[in-house]
Length: 188
Image 1 (spheres, rainbow, N blue to C red):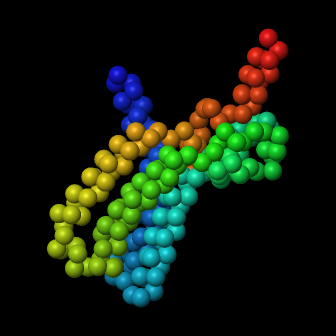
Image 2: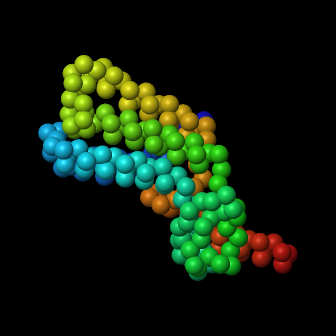
Image 3: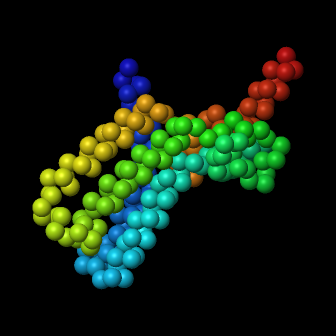
């Protein structure tokens, strides 16, 4: 039982948009001038928020596979399967079809980033400085609550994708192993 719990918690780490959030946390003091914004800083901050939010959502619609050449290839998930790289012409990538869970993951990754990005101290000081003093309790409580809700949804809708920005593991996305298994089972 505890092994499954730790496994689920470990999977949450790779499902949350941690790389994008790290990049945002690294750049936000620079683009907001540590919360002392001019008009240019506000535009830069808005652009950073949009780019990072897009990345959080877009990453949910990518996946990878190990091709017959033994290399890891990435693609965009579509309704017909994975939009492949040129090295994947002989493989059946229709098993990587778009699923309802992809939209759920994209939405909650976007929500998590929106809460963290819009309630960041530098962003608050830049866009709505009066909010910082008046709604301090909301700024302290909302991020953990959203994190718990999103984490619960990620456990309910587990993600099997290994897209851009996610760690690679030995998984079912290894098509070279699938072709070896199917050839050995057909010869038996």
